[in-house]
Amino acid sequence: MFFEDEARFGRISREMACWVKRSIIPSVAKQMIREYIYAYSALSPQTGDCYSIISPFCNTEAMNEFLQQLSDQYKHYRIILILDKAVTLRVFKISSNFKRLNGYKTLTSFKSMRVL
Image 1 (cartoon, helix red, strand yellow):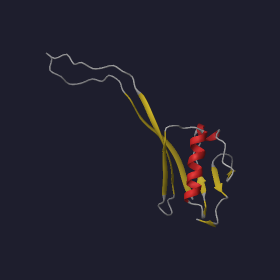
Image 2: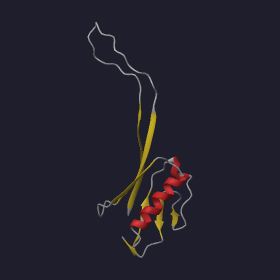
Image 3: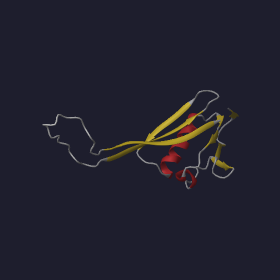
């Protein structure tokens, strides 16, 4: 059994307060930069196994790529994958080797041979 979650990491540059002497006027460049990367991870509390990928996108293709790689990594196991209710996960299309159980909360891989 694995629990899956995704996260966004990045930076947004913005002006901030700083400490300077009263006689000095600080010079701060103002340029808004928004850069993000996304991490997809699945963790098995029973075994301590963790599988992650880093992607520049958070969309259907990235999620399906993560599911495919997770399935390939554990191809000799039946994977029960517990998902949260993230909006991006409610609308993605599942790869053919996965089946939804209980709506969009759980996925089970049928590509595998034995139970984890």
